[in-house]
Length: 431
Image (cartoon, rainbow, N blue to C red; front, side, top):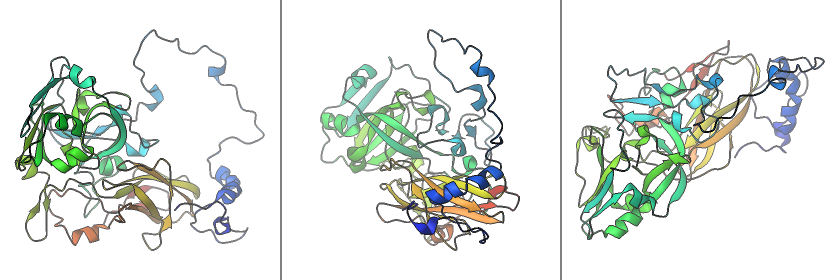
């Protein structure tokens, strides 16, 4: 997949040839440089000397004895934002969404990682916190944080996505920006203890087929998880991107299930109970279930299927005249790694392979890029991903063939289009 920089078919068209949308190779990128400059990407004439900035002639800020570093004030606009499509009129149960269009690489900074709360943010003293493992086990256990921190640990990169990500835009455009439509998605390096190690120590009895994880927040959020998933790659996480979890991410410990919907990754974890069957609580019956065409509802659909979205250009941005642009975005799959991403700039009539940026990891965000020479006319851009199982990201119409798209529908992984107008404005093109 991606651009073959040695393929002569990717070279720029000869002078006088009609401009077309194309994937550009190395030689054509170099040939396009004057056009890029003319299009406004380079602001200074070559003959003008580069001025000496004030920062070259003055002392910098002094170095403090101790501090927690923060972004420079010029990036203060890069923030999580609560949902403003579905507006909650209270401050305890809501989403705060990641600005994906402003995320540079695959790792989401901790201060921008999306949030979902059911009863506000719990603040727990780690010295007082306890975690119990009980139920159908031979040796019930209770751990302090000091106990847990003595265990060997692992660090792994995984995305996390809320099952409600993109739920506002099934049939019609409701979101304006990619932060609104896809901002319940983030990615981090998680550090902690494989849950299998702790459950092996407790000794699972043969009848134990499910495990209930319960949080210590005011909502007492809990979920039933099959024992196979718990023992496969479930993680008791206490670290995120090189530091301890933030309070809003479940400090001091949370469950983490790679590739599964975020609500299964119970925060502020206090209790793990091995049981013989799921307990069918509200979050497994009235919530986090999917309506089906036959009138029934699908339970325990935890896997987040293969999905992608273009983040730049995306809704709310404006292209500055015809010329070369790099289409950028993210792809991910809860079933493995991203195998390929295709991009369309003509509303799906044709698709071209995008370049996948390393590293490409299982159940992790993958960044993709595609060089596009925009001719200045209306365009409709979108991406579709394929994962290592062979699954291809579907259209909404294809999803509607197997799902009942009505009401509060979750697990929307359909292809998401953006429209570019002649004046370069980009907006949501869901129809």
